[in-house]
Image 1 (cartoon, rainbow, N blue to C red):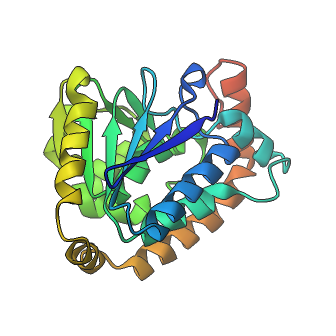
Image 2: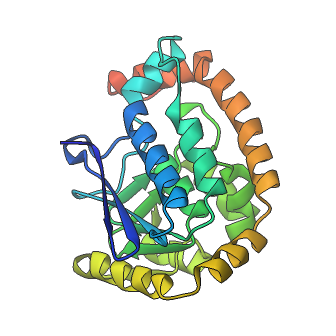
Image 3: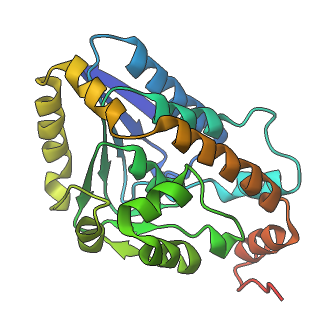
Length: 252
């Protein structure tokens, strides 16, 4: 079974992370499938909105740390599909909805900043542990997160990497609403259907007016250069070794 599945029905493209045995940790192949799904969304006129959701207990543990560790040793894939996925997140003109349960770690949190509606289950936790892994924020989150929630909250999220509960994420403006876990998918589909019924042209124009994509992409490129260099740093290598050995890293 594919680790990313798509289903199109009634103008809604539902994109599902389906690697629950690995906490939906994202591999290079999964990023490729996600990027492809967004390109399909943009290309097919009959699809009006996309929904991101995930099978299992958590939305996603973020990047597969095994692949991260390999990249830190210059053993990663020749083509990194994460960059295409993130660029497509910015460029897509149609509405994106995120439907999040359990933990959303790293890119699983920062991608929410590119979604137009974000629904969280009441057990959701948003975690941005980049600095804990000796890395830096990505997906233009170093720009978008402070704009969304203020510098001090964003710095705390990135510097400490501690979970942000669903209710706090709602109060800070990261999410639109918090619902009971057993109602999450039904409420998500209800809102998706409302967007399908809106005029697609006006929606796309309004979305385009609400953010400076050139600025977002420029910041993303700046982050990517620093992230790639830091991924190969001694700090990052120690962080990944410590994770594999189940010990606290020593950054001294």
